[in-house]
Amino acid sequence: MDERLGSLLLFNATQCMDARTLKDFLEEGLPPEELLGGGEKLWKERGLAPRAIGFLQEALIRKWHLREYETCLSLGVSLVSWDDPEYPPGLWDLPDPPVLLYCRGTFPPPEKFSGLVGVVGTRRCSPYAWGVAASLGRALAENSWGVVSGGALGIDGAAHGGCLEGEGYTLAVFGTGVDQVFPAEHEELFYNILKARGALISEYPLGTPGRAWRFPRRNRIIAGLGEKIVVVEAPRKSGAIITARLGGEMGREIWAVPGRIDEGICAGSNGLLAEGGYPLVSVADFVEILNPSGEQKLLFSEEGGFLSSEGEKILAFLRLRGDQTVDNIAQGVTMSAASVTGELALLESLDKVRSSGPGRWRAAL
Amino acid sequence: MQPGEISLAHRGVLFLDEMPEFRRELLEAMRQPLEDGCIAVNRASGSVTYPSRVLLVCAANPCVCGYYGDPKVPCRCSSSERRRYAKRLSGPILDRVDLHVAVPRLTPEELLSEEEGSRENSQTIRERILHARERQRARWHPFGYSCNAEVPERLLRKTMRLGTKEKTFLREAARKHVLTGRGMTRLLRVVRTIGDLQGEEELSLSMFAEALGYRKDGNPWMNA
Image (cartoon, rainbow over all chains, first blue to last red; front, side, top):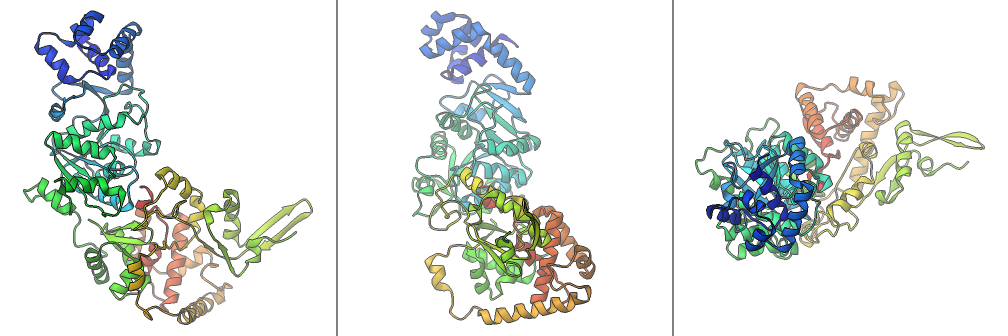
């Protein structure tokens, strides 16, 4: 490992140094390795926090950076630092771009993907929002866009999962070390992301555990990497809203999925709309805006092998009326509830409808 | 040695309300008697075999607070709480339940929109069931069985001739919904029964679809 990378690992681990400061120093003729070699006097002069100085002194004695680098090698974790050509340019829009990123998988995204869309929202989402996030992830994938999100439960997981279903590129930005599995429920999802040539990245050193205060900070990376930010569902106080605010400050387009006005769980995303965010009222239209060439694949082919005229009728009814119970559908299309159940199973196997909650159905987006 | 509830309900209905509230071991112990139709009770004073051919009916809430998926009231459970609650019912037990029907809580508008008299009354349904039962008895009597549930798998499959369309559908369903071998046989029994309820000997694709609609298959909203 060269001295430059070692010093970057160390400065990054202090968590109070950003790439912009280091870049400014370099332009003044002070590269990071010389800043590190300067010792306590120079660090103080350059305004490093006492906490950071304490950390650096101890870490240098323990040769922390050498061990960290070796662990990265043994785990197959690659490092992308601010002075690498692979460093995503979008991160420079941040006031405090990360010094370096720990990456597992394929990073940066392969060129065949048009770009990344940040899809974020609450962990405790409604089944409806879960379905929207999954459809959105899938539609983006099918139109050669990647999905960047936070790997959390709820909306994040649905968006990543939908993207994998559409065989797309998805990137999870961790608020823990990239060697951690947090939340534990997502072990399989993370495995699938790596298997599908996506990536897991983080600015935090290996072994960093999950702590609540790290996640809002991590969100700025999602805002920096996403060319547009979609908030699917979020209450007022939520990491997703932080992501959207940061994104907005950087000039990213902020989209939000409209939610019911009498529910706190979407008060934050609705608030973004009130403040001038773009309303995402149709996944197909959103994707159309991303790829205006009109070359995008149809989300599903209209000539499904098993689609009967009854199925068409149910689908038309659901498209018109939204979320419905089996009994209401039966009444609406004058069929027996039993045959509606059968038709719904057929439609579901064609991905044309999805269950939006116990006993409730809606047309797929 | 007293027979238990499952034997007392022999040839009748055993109803377990709030199924996830039962002890796990108790539910798991029901697997064998449900499959075999009889239960061996072994005690120090000896062992007895009691019959246990029941129609099992169970009810459960979607989560502890009961509001998951409700269109109006937000659920108060965390996703791990929901997962834990759902896990109280093991896969093998759920696999033995043929008809899964999710009962949504209706909004006041939906309750009011239900037209009076548009529903079948119980008398008509009862007659249809009796006819279906009679059809089954007539079909299986020569083999010594009285209903679709009792017929051995081999015989069932032999008498159900499947067309190519139905076979493709089943193959797709097994792939997509992760049907177990037992699940597939149970699905076929339900299809046969749907046919009997409609008074049709010939089985159609829509019957297969309906039966599949009743199977539990990790609904996507359960993952949220």
